[in-house]
Image (cartoon, rainbow, N blue to C red; front, side, top):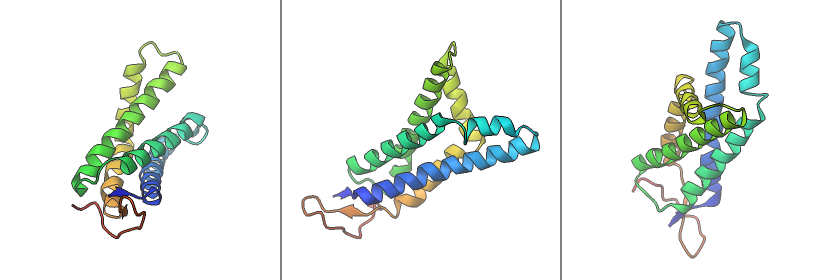
Length: 152
C-alpha cells in the first residue's frame, strides 16, 4: 500500500507552506521590533528564490511520501524532516553560491540556523507529525482508497 497522490500533495503543501509562513511571521515580528522591515521584505515575499524553495520542498515531500513504503507514524517526521532540512540546506547553499559567497556551505548552515530561530524547522517537524496521522493509503493494484493511516 502506498499513500495516494492527493494525500501526499496535501501533506506536502501543509508542511511546506505552514512552516514557511511560520518562519515569515516570526521574522516579521523580529523585524518590526528592530524597525527593519525592508530586510524582511527582501528575504521573504519579494525573494523569488523563496518561492522556488516552496516548490522544491513540496515536490520532494510529495515524492517522499508517495514513493516510500508505509512506516510507523513516528518515523514520518524523521524521514520527511531530514528531506526538508536537506532541501533547505541545498537552497541556502545554492542561493549563496549564486550571490557569489566564498563558502556557500557556511551560508547554507546559517540558513538552517535561521530556520531554527524563526521556528520554521520546528514547525515543519510538528506539522509533519500532525499530518502523518491523516495520510490516506491506496491498495496497490486496485487504486481504491482505504481509510488506513500510517500508524502501523
